[in-house]
Length: 355
Ligand code: PLP
Image 1 (cartoon, rainbow, N blue to C red):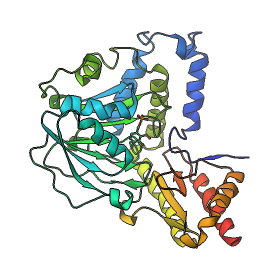
Image 2 (image 1 turned 45 degrees about the vertical axis):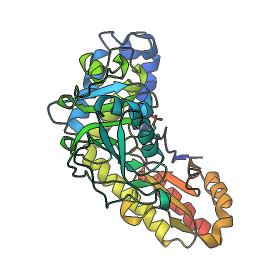
Image 3 (image 1 turned 30 degrees about the vertical axis):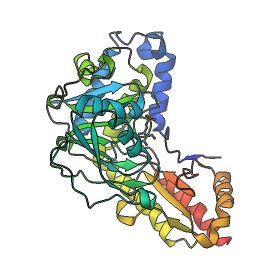
């Protein structure tokens, strides 16, 4: 049976990315060695990092003066590296869910943290819009896509202080104006690569402004100075990331990714809104294109387990919602084909007919 992979992350990658990576795992560049057996300093590997950095810059139109880094530790380590490198006295954070909360917790160890707004009281079902960013904050931190709660900030915001964004689950799903940020980071395991590599886009001149000692490995400058090769980088996920970046470019770039994301999300939300059994959990204007969350309407609540079974039997994978929201979550990342979204919609319609 064909499987439709709606996993939230690690998640679906383009088939050719998996095939090309598998080929390199067996024999890297006809070297007779596996990608897993070569030095990250081998002359054939440096071009992989160089091309991945160049494609990052090209696809996101990153202006001069920014560096692209491939690190370990996941987005979770960035929750601590960001304040280590940027927080001198005070930072502002927008609390839009579990991942924002984790970022806030780490920042509090480094200085004053102002939570400018939070949607916690509404189980993070919307993104607060009414707030003031303190003009004396060192930076303002946002989570652009809230993977668990299915809300997304789909536009770059204006801020009186430098913006730092966790874009773990929506990077490369729309064009972004990188000049509005001093740092953008994320775990790669959604739209980019298998788990194991973290991407960081950082504005060079924004660094070096904190007075504390920053441990070598946690200092962005170390990784800029060493081209992400200060220590052994995650070679295999970087290779896979390069294949994805090539794929995005060949498909037409981030504008095309955005067009497809809108098309898929519109299709699924239209069905959620039409179907008598289901209801979306996120405020309409903040609905994520990447993680589409919905539950059974209260009067059909007892059908939840039945629908999960019904959908699973028809090839849907990973649609169980996160425990913080319940119900269902269909993650529709870049590599998700429209046909899979249609298959889920067909499932929802069939199930509706039975009830
Ligand atoms: N931020 C967001 C928005 C996420 O979705 C996740 C993981 O799902 C994380 C951070 C944590 O990433 P990692 O597991 O790479 O530390």
